[in-house]
Structures are given as C-alpha cells and as structure tokens.
Length: 87
Image (tube, rainbow, N blue to C red; front, side, top):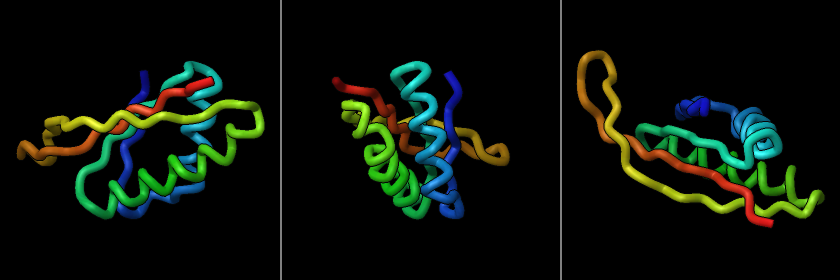
C-alpha cells in the first residue's frame, strides 16, 4: 500500500484524485501528515474525494492514528489517516 505524504503545500484537489483512484482500486488509501497545515490539506482532500466517489454510491470513512516518522534524522510524530470505502 502506497502512503500518500501530505504537506502544507499539497494541492487538495490532486490528493483527492489520488485518494479516489486508490479507493477504486484497493478500497483503501493511507495518508501521512506532519503539522497542522499538512493535516488541514489532508482533511480537505478527503472532503473533496467524497464528492468524487459519491455518485457511484461509495461513502468514505476516516480512521486517524498517530505515527512516528524520521525527518532529517529527527523523530517526529505525525498523523496517519486511513481512508476506507463504505457501501
């Protein structure tokens, strides 16, 4: 499973397209965000992706979790958002 790494500069529409594609292929997508700005973009992307998949009768469910990530040799705590389809 590919983990989508989201930053505060990520385009929510592009991320939403990636989420919708993964949901159609695997019924699951995972995102990783570090920081408030990145988390904001990730949540926006999920909201937009819901609109992409809703016409086909799919609803999305988010499962948030903490994750430890190493950035430039330093351990950071990030948020992992698992997005699954619910029919």
